[in-house]
Image 1: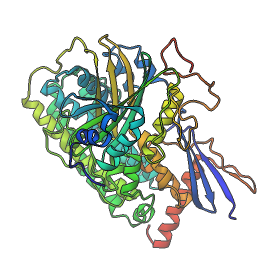
Image 2 (image 1 turned 90 degrees about the vertical axis):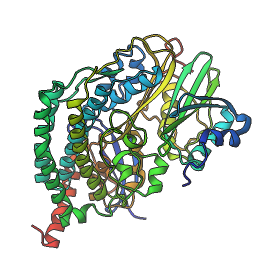
Image 3 (image 1 turned 90 degrees about the horizontal axis):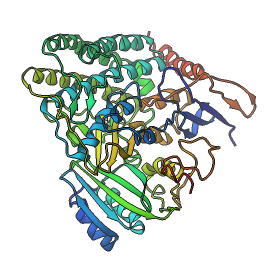
Image 4 (image 1 turned 30 degrees about the vertical axis):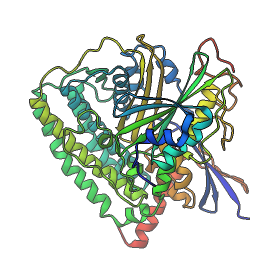
Length: 397
Length: 150
C-alpha cells in the first residue's frame, strides 16, 4: 500500500481575510483525499444582529468581509426591503449597482494577482494590484472610503454621487478596459499558464449542481446562473451587460470568467454613471418601520451569490438574521476538485474558487517516515517550481 | 436535469398531498410552503431533482414552543425563491437529514446542529463545523437567551 502523507494547510494566513484549514491526504505526489475545516473566524454575527436595529444591521454585516464589504450590506438591505415591502428610488438603484460592480473589479484583480503569484507569475501579481489602485481611488472619490463604504441602507443609499464627480469617474474607468484586455492577453496567450491551469481542478456541471455552487465557480463549469440576471435587483436590468460563461470547469476557465466579468463590470459602471447624469430624484425612501414578516435578499458578490434572510416581529430589530456567504457553498466543491491531482496543483485549485483561503506559516507536513515540516511558503514554492520546470521544458522564457 | 416546466408550488401540492400544510405566495418572486416534518425530505427532493431548484441555504431558528427550519430553493430560470418551512415542536428537535443525497445541505445541517441543537439523523458527517471541537455539549449559541441548553 502506498504511503499516505497528511499535508495540513492553514488555518491562518495574513494575506487572506478568512482562515480555513485543509488536510490534504497525499500518496506520492497525488492528492487522494481532502478534509475541510472552517470556523476559525466565527464571530457570532447572526446572534449579534438580533441585538441591533434594522438600521444598524447593514453596518454590522459590512464587517463580515473586508474584500466584498458592500456585498453583504446589499443583500441585507434587500432582505429587509423584501420583508417590509420597501420601495427604493431609481437613482439609488444605479448607485447600488455602481458600488457592487466596482467592488467586483477590485476583488477579481486582487484574486488574479494572488493566482499569478501562486503560479510563479509575480509580474501578473504586480500588474493586477497596480491596476486595482485606481479602482480604490474611484471608491474614495464616490464614497469617501477605499473600503467599507457604508453606502447601503434600507430604502436606498446613504450618499449621492455628485454630478461634478461623474466625468472624473468615467475618465478614471477609461484606462481600465485597456489594462484588463492586456491582462487577459497575458493569461490567455501564455502557453505555460495554459499548461498549469488547463484540465486542472475540473468541476463538472453535476458537481456544481450537487453542491449548489455559485458565482464564477459555477459559471466556469457551464452553469449559467447569475443572480444579477436571474433575480434582477438594483439597476442590473436597467443597463446593458452579459453573463460570462465557459464550459470546461478547470482553473483556466475560472480565470477567464473572472477577467471577462471585470470587463462587463466596467460596462455596467459606465452605464450606471451615464444614467446618473440624467436620473434625478431622491436616493432614499426613508422607511420608518419594518412590519412583521420575513424576507430574502441575495446579491451576486464577486465570489458568487450571497444570501441574507431576515425576520421581523414588528419591532425595530430582527428576531433572526441568517447570512450565507458564497464560499460556504463553493468551498465543499474542493472535495471533488482537488482529489486526483498533483500536490503542486493543490495551491491553485484551492485558490481557484477565490475563497478566503489560506496556506500558512504554521502549516506542517508530517510524513509517516519521520518528521518533515513544510509551511505555506513551501506550497507556493512547489507550485512555482512546477511552472519553472514547465517553462524550461517548453522552451518559454 | 429537468427544468421547471410546471409551477414548483403546484407540483409540491401534487407530490406531497396532505404533507403540504400551508402555502403563502407573497409575490411572483417569493413563496413559503409549510410542509409536515415527515414530508420534508420528499418535498426537498422533488424541488431539487424534479424542478431543478438550487438549495441556497437553510435558516433555522427557535420560535415559541419549538423550532423552525426554512429550506430556501432558488429557481433561477423562473426568478423565484420557494422556501419550505418545517415546524418542529418541543425542546429536542429532530429532522431527517437530506445531506445523504444532497451534498449542498451537508454544511448547513452541521451548522444548525451545533448552533441550535437540531438533530439530523442520517447525516454522513456530523462533526462541529463552526464551533471548536471541545465546545461544551448541549450549549447552543443561537437558542434564545433563556434556553441555551437542550
